[in-house]
Length: 389
Image (tube, rainbow, N blue to C red; front, side, top):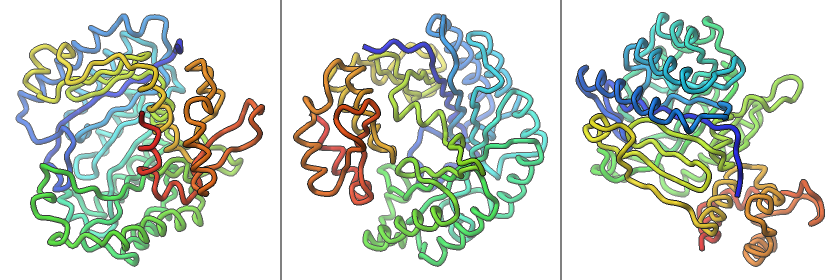
């Protein structure tokens, strides 16, 4: 069993000016009194978890949503104040905040920086206004450029830009336009996610064919084009959908520390409706209903379970194999007290022989890693499913 001394925090702000047509996250437009009550509930939940932080160090802090930049910045300041009451926020702690170009101002960014935000994630999705409109986004590419400039002017040195592929009527040519415009700005990080049409969304009701979503074959070509283009422009792919720009010294510090901890199964705690947590072998998630959460913040869970070793092993595999560098075999042994080959040897051998995975180094090498090849990453969902018991 692991004994972690550090912890990450995620704070969920489920409010948006307007919900995007593809979005199935726990988010939406709410009246001001609900937003105010929700922030009060967040502060109570953080305070109730004070004991969780005793003797711990904060590894990273992530404010996500929804659209955190859609609420008054003073509310974000209150959240930071309460977190700093329960755990020390060091100057070098990675603190990320998601923003939407349609909801930001010069003053808001200035306020976020004063609270300690040192990494900004901007939801762009596309550099073409026609594609943004098709997605139901509230901003234009010109709005994004103004926001990007403000973020840089305020001294933010780490910026992520979210883009989306396989969106309605997207072609390889239109994708290249987006990639060209984004990479020319040289953000330190780019997340490139393929559109998934989820149940309960307006996109799902319309259907992929009516939406004009690229075919499965075309989507795969778009997916591979994204990888090739970003690599050629200096962005290292370190996870299935995430790319980081190496600095002149080859440093990899531009990777998202918060996400890496998630894929490495490090301890993290989530605050807010539908926020998930992993503490040791306990995995739990707050209820998504805002009314229930506000009445008794953090008390009601939609999931609360103590992971059995086999479940934790499966998580170790399918989360770790999302990373391009894969998993360190000795980490498996150190956490579970058994060699990885004793549990998954047969499956791993099958994938190596099929050219879908590889080992780095020999079995007695303490740094040996097991990772998916490019072919394996292309069908990663199928492969990872085989590591479930």
